[in-house]
Amino acid sequence: MNQSVYIHIPFCRKLCSYCDFCKMNYNSIFVSKYLGSLSAEIKDKYEGEEISTLYIGGGTPSCLSTSELEALCKIISTFKLKEDYEFTFECNIGDINSDLLMLLKNMGVNRLSIGVESFDSDNLELMNRYCTFEDAYSKIELCREMGFDNINIDLIYALPNEEFKTVKKDIELALKLKPDHISTYSLILEDNTLLKLKGYQSIDEELDYKMYNYIIRKLTEKGYVHYEISNFAKPGKESRHNLNCWDNNEYYGFGLGAAGYFEGVRYQNTRNLTKYLNGEYVLENELVTKESKMKYELMLGLRKLKGINIKEFHDKYNENIQNVFDLNALMKNKDLILKDNYLFINPKKIYLMNEILLKIL
Ligand SMILES: C[S@@+](CC[C@H](N)C(=O)[O-])C[C@H]1O[C@@H](n2cnc3c(N)ncnc32)[C@H](O)[C@@H]1O
Ligand code: SF4
Image (cartoon, rainbow, N blue to C red; front, side, top):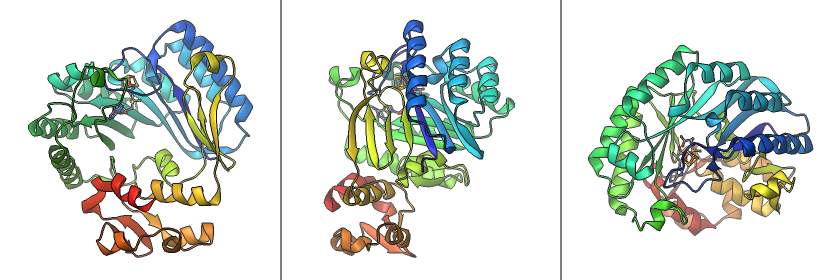
Protein backbone atom coordinates (compact mmCIF):
# COMPACT_ATOMS: atom_id res chain seq x y z
CA MET A 1 0.00 0.00 0.00
CA ASN A 2 1.48 3.33 -1.09
CA GLN A 3 1.49 6.10 1.48
CA SER A 4 3.96 8.52 -0.07
CA VAL A 5 3.93 10.65 -3.18
CA TYR A 6 6.83 12.45 -4.85
CA ILE A 7 6.12 14.97 -7.61
CA HIS A 8 8.93 16.36 -9.74
CA ILE A 9 8.82 19.88 -11.17
CA PRO A 10 11.82 20.11 -13.50
CA PHE A 11 12.04 23.88 -13.96
CA CYS A 12 14.54 26.34 -12.52
CA ARG A 13 15.02 30.06 -12.96
CA LYS A 14 18.77 29.61 -13.30
CA LEU A 15 20.88 26.47 -13.54
CA CYS A 16 23.58 25.72 -10.99
CA SER A 17 27.02 24.61 -12.11
CA TYR A 18 27.08 21.40 -10.03
CA CYS A 19 23.57 20.11 -10.57
CA ASP A 20 22.78 16.91 -12.41
CA PHE A 21 19.14 16.76 -11.38
CA CYS A 22 16.45 16.45 -14.00
CA LYS A 23 15.84 20.15 -14.69
CA MET A 24 15.70 22.81 -17.39
CA ASN A 25 15.26 26.54 -17.64
CA TYR A 26 11.79 27.82 -16.79
CA ASN A 27 9.58 28.27 -19.84
CA SER A 28 5.91 29.06 -19.34
CA ILE A 29 4.79 27.21 -22.49
CA PHE A 30 6.51 24.02 -21.37
CA VAL A 31 5.22 24.41 -17.82
CA SER A 32 1.63 24.51 -18.94
CA LYS A 33 2.06 21.43 -21.17
CA TYR A 34 4.00 19.71 -18.41
CA LEU A 35 1.25 20.20 -15.85
CA GLY A 36 -1.24 18.67 -18.30
CA SER A 37 0.91 15.57 -18.66
CA LEU A 38 1.59 15.37 -14.94
CA SER A 39 -2.13 15.43 -14.24
CA ALA A 40 -2.69 12.62 -16.77
CA GLU A 41 0.12 10.52 -15.27
CA ILE A 42 -1.35 10.88 -11.78
CA LYS A 43 -4.86 9.95 -13.00
CA ASP A 44 -3.32 6.94 -14.70
CA LYS A 45 -1.47 5.56 -11.68
CA TYR A 46 -2.95 6.81 -8.42
CA GLU A 47 -5.27 4.25 -6.90
CA GLY A 48 -6.92 6.45 -4.31
CA GLU A 49 -4.99 5.37 -1.20
CA GLU A 50 -4.72 7.68 1.78
CA ILE A 51 -1.39 9.49 1.60
CA SER A 52 0.81 10.26 4.64
CA THR A 53 3.59 12.19 2.93
CA LEU A 54 3.61 14.33 -0.17
CA TYR A 55 6.83 15.88 -1.49
CA ILE A 56 7.01 18.35 -4.34
CA GLY A 57 10.61 18.70 -5.44
CA GLY A 58 12.65 19.52 -8.46
CA GLY A 59 14.08 21.44 -10.11
CA THR A 60 12.58 24.36 -8.32
CA PRO A 61 8.82 24.10 -7.80
CA SER A 62 8.78 27.59 -6.25
CA CYS A 63 9.71 29.17 -9.59
CA LEU A 64 6.21 28.51 -10.99
CA SER A 65 3.90 31.51 -11.39
CA THR A 66 0.79 31.97 -9.23
CA SER A 67 -1.54 30.59 -11.90
CA GLU A 68 0.75 27.62 -12.51
CA LEU A 69 0.88 26.90 -8.79
CA GLU A 70 -2.90 27.10 -8.66
CA ALA A 71 -3.07 24.56 -11.47
CA LEU A 72 -0.64 22.34 -9.54
CA CYS A 73 -2.79 22.76 -6.45
CA LYS A 74 -5.80 21.50 -8.41
CA ILE A 75 -3.81 18.49 -9.59
CA ILE A 76 -2.75 17.49 -6.10
CA SER A 77 -6.24 17.92 -4.71
CA THR A 78 -6.82 14.44 -6.20
CA PHE A 79 -4.83 12.94 -3.34
CA LYS A 80 -6.62 11.83 -0.21
CA LEU A 81 -4.35 13.05 2.56
CA LYS A 82 -4.30 11.49 6.02
CA GLU A 83 -5.08 13.81 8.88
CA ASP A 84 -1.48 14.00 10.11
CA TYR A 85 0.08 14.26 6.66
CA GLU A 86 3.49 15.80 5.94
CA PHE A 87 3.57 17.93 2.80
CA THR A 88 6.98 19.26 1.75
CA PHE A 89 7.55 21.86 -0.93
CA GLU A 90 11.04 22.75 -2.22
CA CYS A 91 11.80 26.43 -2.51
CA ASN A 92 14.61 28.61 -3.66
CA ILE A 93 15.35 31.52 -1.29
CA GLY A 94 14.95 34.02 -4.13
CA ASP A 95 11.36 32.90 -4.83
CA ILE A 96 10.09 33.24 -1.27
CA ASN A 97 7.63 36.07 -0.63
CA SER A 98 4.36 36.40 1.27
CA ASP A 99 2.17 35.69 -1.79
CA LEU A 100 3.99 32.42 -2.48
CA LEU A 101 3.83 31.39 1.18
CA MET A 102 0.12 32.20 1.41
CA LEU A 103 -0.52 30.07 -1.66
CA LEU A 104 1.51 27.19 -0.23
CA LYS A 105 -0.36 27.45 3.07
CA ASN A 106 -3.68 27.25 1.24
CA MET A 107 -2.38 24.29 -0.71
CA GLY A 108 -1.77 22.47 2.58
CA VAL A 109 2.04 22.60 2.56
CA ASN A 110 3.36 22.17 6.10
CA ARG A 111 7.09 21.66 5.49
CA LEU A 112 9.45 23.79 3.44
CA SER A 113 12.77 22.61 2.07
CA ILE A 114 14.94 25.53 1.06
CA GLY A 115 18.13 25.46 -1.02
CA VAL A 116 20.63 27.71 0.73
CA GLU A 117 23.89 25.81 -0.04
CA SER A 118 26.43 28.38 1.21
CA PHE A 119 26.78 32.00 2.26
CA ASP A 120 30.31 32.34 0.99
CA SER A 121 30.65 34.61 -2.04
CA ASP A 122 33.38 32.50 -3.71
CA ASN A 123 31.34 29.32 -3.25
CA LEU A 124 28.21 31.01 -4.55
CA GLU A 125 29.97 32.34 -7.61
CA LEU A 126 31.36 28.89 -8.36
CA MET A 127 27.88 27.38 -7.99
CA ASN A 128 26.22 30.10 -10.09
CA ARG A 129 23.93 30.93 -7.18
CA TYR A 130 23.12 34.01 -5.18
CA CYS A 131 21.98 34.09 -1.57
CA THR A 132 23.31 36.30 1.20
CA PHE A 133 22.90 35.46 4.86
CA GLU A 134 20.62 38.50 5.25
CA ASP A 135 18.38 37.22 2.41
CA ALA A 136 18.14 33.78 3.94
CA TYR A 137 17.52 35.19 7.42
CA SER A 138 14.72 37.54 6.39
CA LYS A 139 13.06 34.93 4.13
CA ILE A 140 13.09 32.27 6.82
CA GLU A 141 11.72 34.79 9.35
CA LEU A 142 8.90 35.45 6.89
CA CYS A 143 8.21 31.72 6.59
CA ARG A 144 7.94 31.51 10.39
CA GLU A 145 5.66 34.55 10.53
CA MET A 146 3.42 32.90 7.95
CA GLY A 147 3.11 29.85 10.22
CA PHE A 148 5.65 27.39 8.79
CA ASP A 149 7.18 25.56 11.71
CA ASN A 150 8.97 22.77 9.86
CA ILE A 151 11.78 24.15 7.71
CA ASN A 152 14.72 22.36 6.15
CA ILE A 153 17.72 24.03 4.60
CA ASP A 154 20.12 22.35 2.16
CA LEU A 155 23.84 23.06 2.38
CA ILE A 156 26.70 21.93 0.17
CA TYR A 157 30.29 21.62 1.38
CA ALA A 158 33.58 20.34 0.00
CA LEU A 159 33.39 22.54 -3.08
CA PRO A 160 36.56 22.81 -5.19
CA ASN A 161 39.16 24.91 -3.37
CA GLU A 162 36.93 25.33 -0.33
CA GLU A 163 38.77 25.84 2.93
CA PHE A 164 37.84 24.38 6.29
CA LYS A 165 37.18 27.83 7.73
CA THR A 166 34.48 28.45 5.08
CA VAL A 167 32.53 25.38 6.21
CA LYS A 168 32.84 26.53 9.82
CA LYS A 169 31.45 29.92 8.90
CA ASP A 170 28.63 28.42 6.80
CA ILE A 171 27.55 26.16 9.66
CA GLU A 172 27.75 29.02 12.17
CA LEU A 173 25.50 31.16 9.97
CA ALA A 174 23.16 28.28 9.11
CA LEU A 175 22.58 27.70 12.83
CA LYS A 176 21.52 31.32 13.22
CA LEU A 177 18.62 30.57 10.90
CA LYS A 178 17.38 28.00 13.46
CA PRO A 179 16.14 25.52 10.86
CA ASP A 180 14.26 22.46 12.10
CA HIS A 181 16.17 20.25 9.71
CA ILE A 182 19.49 20.53 7.88
CA SER A 183 20.65 18.48 4.89
CA THR A 184 24.38 18.82 4.27
CA TYR A 185 25.77 17.34 1.09
CA SER A 186 29.39 16.84 0.23
CA LEU A 187 29.68 18.03 -3.37
CA ILE A 188 29.51 15.30 -5.96
CA LEU A 189 31.31 16.38 -9.13
CA GLU A 190 28.80 14.92 -11.57
CA ASP A 191 29.63 14.25 -15.21
CA ASN A 192 28.09 16.72 -17.64
CA THR A 193 27.90 19.52 -15.13
CA LEU A 194 29.60 22.82 -15.78
CA LEU A 195 31.93 22.31 -12.83
CA LYS A 196 33.16 19.00 -14.18
CA LEU A 197 33.42 20.26 -17.76
CA LYS A 198 35.52 23.19 -16.54
CA GLY A 199 37.94 20.69 -15.04
CA TYR A 200 37.40 21.38 -11.35
CA GLN A 201 38.69 18.70 -9.00
CA SER A 202 37.24 17.33 -5.78
CA ILE A 203 38.92 18.48 -2.61
CA ASP A 204 41.28 16.24 -0.71
CA GLU A 205 39.42 13.31 0.90
CA GLU A 206 40.91 13.98 4.30
CA LEU A 207 39.72 17.56 4.24
CA ASP A 208 36.26 16.39 3.17
CA TYR A 209 36.26 13.97 6.11
CA LYS A 210 37.40 16.70 8.50
CA MET A 211 34.58 18.97 7.27
CA TYR A 212 32.00 16.19 7.64
CA ASN A 213 33.13 15.41 11.18
CA TYR A 214 33.04 19.06 12.10
CA ILE A 215 29.47 19.37 10.77
CA ILE A 216 28.35 16.31 12.75
CA ARG A 217 29.98 17.54 15.95
CA LYS A 218 28.66 21.09 15.68
CA LEU A 219 25.10 20.17 14.71
CA THR A 220 24.71 17.45 17.32
CA GLU A 221 26.12 19.84 19.93
CA LYS A 222 23.31 22.22 18.98
CA GLY A 223 20.61 19.61 19.50
CA TYR A 224 20.22 18.21 16.00
CA VAL A 225 19.90 14.45 15.67
CA HIS A 226 22.15 12.98 12.99
CA TYR A 227 19.64 10.45 11.69
CA GLU A 228 20.83 9.79 8.16
CA ILE A 229 24.23 10.09 6.51
CA SER A 230 23.52 13.65 5.24
CA ASN A 231 20.55 14.64 7.38
CA PHE A 232 20.11 16.28 10.76
CA ALA A 233 16.86 17.16 12.51
CA LYS A 234 15.59 18.63 15.71
CA PRO A 235 13.90 15.73 17.58
CA GLY A 236 10.59 14.93 15.91
CA LYS A 237 11.43 16.94 12.77
CA GLU A 238 12.99 14.10 10.78
CA SER A 239 11.70 13.97 7.20
CA ARG A 240 8.91 11.39 7.31
CA HIS A 241 8.85 11.28 3.53
CA ASN A 242 12.52 10.37 3.21
CA LEU A 243 12.34 7.93 6.11
CA ASN A 244 9.60 6.11 4.24
CA CYS A 245 12.00 5.63 1.30
CA TRP A 246 14.89 4.54 3.51
CA ASP A 247 12.53 2.10 5.22
CA ASN A 248 12.18 0.50 1.79
CA ASN A 249 8.45 1.20 1.58
CA GLU A 250 6.65 1.81 -1.68
CA TYR A 251 5.94 5.33 -2.96
CA TYR A 252 4.54 6.96 -6.04
CA GLY A 253 6.91 9.06 -8.14
CA PHE A 254 5.26 11.35 -10.67
CA GLY A 255 6.85 13.69 -13.19
CA LEU A 256 9.83 13.92 -15.47
CA GLY A 257 12.77 11.82 -14.25
CA ALA A 258 10.93 10.79 -11.08
CA ALA A 259 11.54 7.39 -9.52
CA GLY A 260 8.83 5.36 -7.84
CA TYR A 261 8.13 1.99 -6.31
CA PHE A 262 4.70 0.53 -6.80
CA GLU A 263 3.22 -2.96 -6.41
CA GLY A 264 6.62 -4.61 -6.26
CA VAL A 265 8.07 -2.70 -9.22
CA ARG A 266 10.68 0.05 -8.97
CA TYR A 267 10.32 2.37 -11.94
CA GLN A 268 12.26 5.27 -13.37
CA ASN A 269 10.46 7.86 -15.44
CA THR A 270 11.94 9.26 -18.63
CA ARG A 271 14.09 12.40 -18.53
CA ASN A 272 13.02 13.20 -22.09
CA LEU A 273 10.45 16.01 -22.01
CA THR A 274 9.04 15.26 -25.47
CA LYS A 275 8.38 11.65 -24.51
CA TYR A 276 6.89 12.69 -21.19
CA LEU A 277 4.55 15.16 -22.89
CA ASN A 278 3.51 12.35 -25.24
CA GLY A 279 2.48 10.22 -22.30
CA GLU A 280 5.50 7.89 -22.46
CA TYR A 281 6.21 8.33 -18.78
CA VAL A 282 8.24 5.33 -17.78
CA LEU A 283 11.79 4.69 -18.98
CA GLU A 284 12.41 1.45 -17.13
CA ASN A 285 10.82 -0.97 -14.71
CA GLU A 286 12.57 -3.29 -12.28
CA LEU A 287 10.58 -6.15 -10.87
CA VAL A 288 11.78 -6.42 -7.28
CA THR A 289 12.35 -10.04 -6.29
CA LYS A 290 12.57 -11.10 -2.65
CA GLU A 291 16.36 -11.19 -3.00
CA SER A 292 16.68 -7.69 -4.43
CA LYS A 293 14.13 -6.38 -1.94
CA MET A 294 16.39 -7.59 0.87
CA LYS A 295 19.36 -5.88 -0.80
CA TYR A 296 17.43 -2.61 -0.99
CA GLU A 297 16.43 -3.05 2.65
CA LEU A 298 20.11 -3.25 3.57
CA MET A 299 21.35 -0.45 1.29
CA LEU A 300 18.64 1.98 2.31
CA GLY A 301 18.37 0.93 5.95
CA LEU A 302 22.06 1.38 6.66
CA ARG A 303 21.86 5.01 5.50
CA LYS A 304 19.99 5.64 8.76
CA LEU A 305 22.25 5.99 11.78
CA LYS A 306 19.72 3.91 13.70
CA GLY A 307 20.14 1.14 11.14
CA ILE A 308 17.93 -1.87 10.51
CA ASN A 309 15.69 -3.57 13.02
CA ILE A 310 16.73 -7.19 12.51
CA LYS A 311 13.58 -8.56 14.13
CA GLU A 312 11.42 -6.60 11.69
CA PHE A 313 13.67 -7.83 8.87
CA HIS A 314 12.97 -11.38 10.00
CA ASP A 315 9.21 -10.77 10.28
CA LYS A 316 9.19 -9.28 6.79
CA TYR A 317 11.29 -11.86 4.95
CA ASN A 318 11.28 -14.88 7.23
CA GLU A 319 15.07 -14.79 7.02
CA ASN A 320 17.82 -13.94 9.44
CA ILE A 321 19.73 -10.96 8.02
CA GLN A 322 23.05 -12.52 9.06
CA ASN A 323 22.26 -15.62 7.01
CA VAL A 324 21.32 -13.59 3.96
CA PHE A 325 24.41 -11.36 3.92
CA ASP A 326 27.94 -12.15 4.95
CA LEU A 327 28.40 -9.64 7.74
CA ASN A 328 30.88 -11.46 9.98
CA ALA A 329 34.10 -9.75 8.89
CA LEU A 330 32.49 -6.31 8.97
CA MET A 331 31.09 -6.94 12.44
CA LYS A 332 34.41 -8.29 13.63
CA ASN A 333 36.30 -5.15 12.63
CA LYS A 334 33.44 -2.98 13.97
CA ASP A 335 32.37 -1.46 10.65
CA LEU A 336 28.96 -2.83 11.53
CA ILE A 337 27.46 -3.04 14.99
CA LEU A 338 24.58 -5.21 16.19
CA LYS A 339 22.98 -3.89 19.37
CA ASP A 340 19.49 -4.08 20.88
CA ASN A 341 18.08 -5.71 17.74
CA TYR A 342 19.48 -3.01 15.44
CA LEU A 343 22.20 -3.50 12.85
CA PHE A 344 23.94 -0.22 12.03
CA ILE A 345 27.14 1.22 10.63
CA ASN A 346 29.60 2.26 13.32
CA PRO A 347 28.90 6.02 13.59
CA LYS A 348 32.68 6.64 13.48
CA LYS A 349 32.75 4.96 10.07
CA ILE A 350 29.53 6.29 8.60
CA TYR A 351 31.49 8.30 6.00
CA LEU A 352 32.67 4.91 4.64
CA MET A 353 29.09 3.83 4.00
CA ASN A 354 29.55 3.27 0.27
CA GLU A 355 32.64 1.13 0.73
CA ILE A 356 30.95 -0.88 3.48
CA LEU A 357 27.89 -1.52 1.31
CA LEU A 358 30.11 -2.55 -1.59
CA LYS A 359 31.84 -5.08 0.62
CA ILE A 360 28.51 -6.61 1.61
CA LEU A 361 26.86 -6.62 -1.78
C1 LIG B 1 16.33 20.13 -5.99
S1 LIG B 1 17.59 20.95 -5.14
C2 LIG B 1 16.80 22.00 -3.91
C3 LIG B 1 15.81 23.10 -4.28
C4 LIG B 1 16.17 24.15 -5.28
N1 LIG B 1 16.24 23.59 -6.59
C5 LIG B 1 17.44 24.89 -4.98
O1 LIG B 1 18.48 24.49 -5.51
O2 LIG B 1 17.39 25.87 -4.25
C6 LIG B 1 18.14 19.65 -4.11
C7 LIG B 1 19.46 19.77 -3.39
O3 LIG B 1 20.39 18.78 -3.82
C8 LIG B 1 21.70 19.19 -3.51
N2 LIG B 1 22.56 18.90 -4.65
C9 LIG B 1 22.25 19.02 -5.96
N3 LIG B 1 23.29 18.64 -6.73
C10 LIG B 1 24.29 18.26 -5.90
C11 LIG B 1 25.64 17.78 -6.09
N4 LIG B 1 26.15 17.62 -7.30
N5 LIG B 1 26.39 17.49 -4.99
C12 LIG B 1 25.87 17.65 -3.76
N6 LIG B 1 24.61 18.12 -3.52
C13 LIG B 1 23.84 18.42 -4.58
C14 LIG B 1 21.64 20.67 -3.18
O4 LIG B 1 21.86 20.85 -1.81
C15 LIG B 1 20.21 21.05 -3.54
O5 LIG B 1 19.69 22.01 -2.68
S1 SF4 C 1 20.37 22.95 -7.49
FE1 SF4 C 1 18.23 23.46 -7.55
S2 SF4 C 1 18.13 25.50 -8.57
FE2 SF4 C 1 20.14 24.66 -8.97
S3 SF4 C 1 19.90 23.70 -10.98
FE3 SF4 C 1 19.64 22.09 -9.41
S4 SF4 C 1 17.47 21.98 -9.08
FE4 SF4 C 1 17.88 23.93 -10.16
